[in-house]
Length: 121
Ligand code: HEC
Ligand code: HEC
Ligand code: HEC
Image 1 (tube, rainbow, N blue to C red):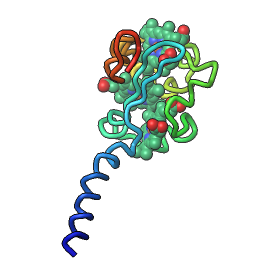
Image 2 (spheres, helix red, strand yellow):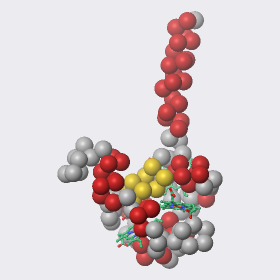
Image 3 (cartoon, protein in one colour):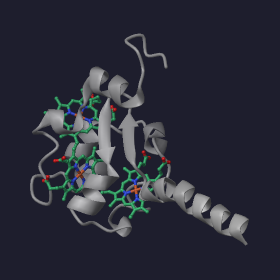
């Protein structure tokens, strides 16, 4: 019985951090340019959006799947696709402003992924 309780407790401790990432975590884009950040924490917790606002009409639940689309770029955003569906200057700040809010750049990207200046782990 004691062992069972201990096991349950351990399982709880081990699963909590995993659950915290259920909302999708941070996505870091590296194509066509390094690096752009999308934060689930911000969009879901701070801005209070539900999953259906983005899934699956705008985005699949798979990190960087959208990078396979040849039009995942600033032109598409300015025409209201992808992030640009909301980042149009009305629902959220426009994609043609505040570049550095989305673009963490090569240094930010490497730091977030724990890579060195050569891009290696
Ligand atoms: C504001 C838009 C937005 C909202 C709201 C949102 N997501 Fe996402 N989600 C994304 C984007 C963007 C991606 C990455 C898709 C891509 O890169 O192709 C993603 C990816 C994911 C992934 C895959 C993560 C991985 O590492 O492969 C999961 C799981 C996910 N979302 C779950 C959720 C859940 C659950 C909710 C609601 C609690 C939610 N998302 C709300 C935009 C959103
Ligand atoms: C369903 C609507 C929606 C989509 C899609 C969406 N966002 Fe947002 N985003 C918002 C809203 C609303 C805010 C908060 C209002 C604001 O800052 O103007 C926000 C804020 C942000 C912020 C500011 C976060 C901060 O810390 O201040 C960043 C960066 C951002 N979004 C990046 C992205 C990127 C990158 C994508 C596409 C991968 C994306 N968003 C897709 C609605 C959306
Ligand atoms: C709402 C988030 C967001 C904002 C704001 C934003 N970008 Fe982007 N940008 C993206 C995403 C998403 C991509 C595609 C993914 C990638 O290249 O990593 C991208 C890609 C790009 C690219 C490569 C593709 C292309 O269209 O040529 C350039 C260059 C670029 N952005 C410049 C800018 C500049 C300059 C600004 C400010 C005027 C800006 N971006 C503001 C999200 C944003």
